[in-house]
Image (cartoon, rainbow, N blue to C red; front, side, top):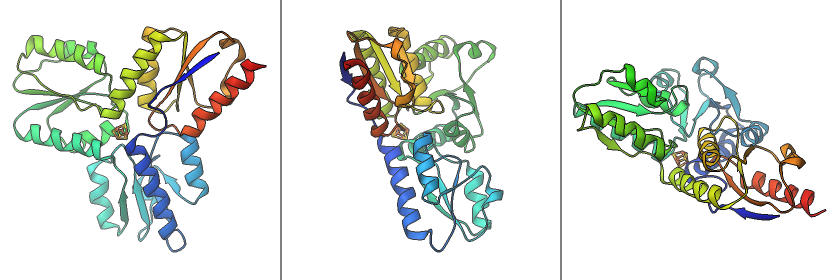
Length: 282
Ligand code: SF4
């Protein structure tokens, strides 16, 4: 078995920063105050469970956070209302929003101010998109090309993307928009890390017999890597833990590429490699 590990594995910069902030906050405050996270700060079960063990409490609404406590906001961004409401409750916010995500908010607000309707290509239910639209008034969110059929868009339009969006699919959306709105502005807000992983997974999927994409089923960027890889290589597997490897999925002669989503610890990838070596060298 030949295993090729992608250059881009383990945490991206934004996820690493958010996790570091959470541990730092716990270290400084947990003896004196309760520390909460509003939603999972990153999309990985292992990371979240370890933070919970250290004392970080997970809540799903601001109502569950008592006054005088500390609240860590997730890497994907948080709705505008949460910032406003927490002020009235005397809650100290630790903002772990990724700077790349904040940059998308800034660009969207700027373009809206300049009179553009903001067309967002992203997952309506993803935390990043929910946060982004909380700042906007004139926007639509589309998840699939076909949704554009029912939309009559006129005037100035700017297309912005979820930070982990697929560039290939985004360009298809742009093409459709340009048919009726040739002046559509395209703002590529896919984060450089996500783009690099996408490029790499395409290359790896073409040059290997099989591909393993490692990451949580909740992780949007892992899902996109999986979908992209599957497009070019049907022998693509999405795993979140070494124990999920099924022996009959792989063989001793396989050339296998491994890549991870941006919220996957390197340790998980290493365990998968170790198990593959153990299973196929015996
Ligand atoms: S994938 Fe990019 S935008 Fe998302 S958290 Fe990581 S660095 Fe930030």
